[in-house]
Image (cartoon, rainbow, N blue to C red; front, side):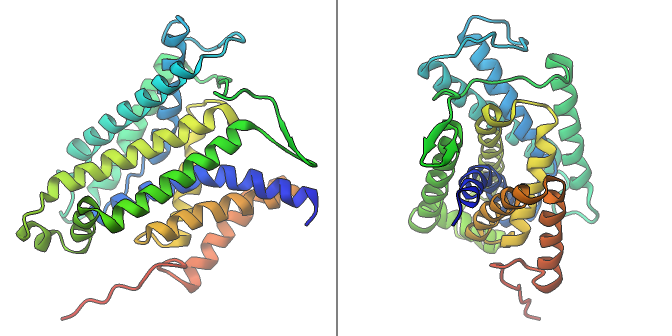
Length: 307
């Protein structure tokens, strides 16, 4: 394998890790509530800016600053910023479910689609009012110097993004398969009515699903900000790619969604070697082909309703 392909593979896996986090978020809300958060992309952007603002505060700068001026927050500041981003995005996820999803879920029509879209527009508008449209260069916690692995160059933030994404996936998979919480979530996903009869607090599980899903979106934005700059418009592309990864893998299969996210990242990076302008064409052509031949995704299962 040539150095260029290895470089594309490493970079693609790092970006694919961010897509996989978003794809996993889509899968969690879909399996537990049969709804999707169509403002997931805006949650990615919001996570990046909330984390960035926490870093500004750690440096003694105003919340609405737009430049770090060469200063780099320490490890403690980075950790506090990460926890702040996860916490704020979790609260926003709870608000979205309570105000924008629960009142409309299960009713005829698709009102929850518009309410989640509207929530995203509100998030983006508030962000523009505070920080403006200008992207901000965010320093990475491990520095921005490119590491050389033979002929391959990789930024520490890319390795960190890939490592965090893999750890999150492994822990989530373990929780889902071996803990009571995971079994409760699987029961709600299978049949909320039966889960309720078994004493499971279905509403709490659904709220938790939106909180965790939104925190994952925030984590994705926080990790991507030092790689691609923090921008209030970055979330649209990341959200679309994450959703595409979930569709390719199968929305109801968390493992498939994760693999779909990684696959899209690698495909995107590989096509970028050849012609960058065909990158998105290749990604969405793959989505169309998968939907044409496997409507439930590569790892999804067809639901059979007994009558």
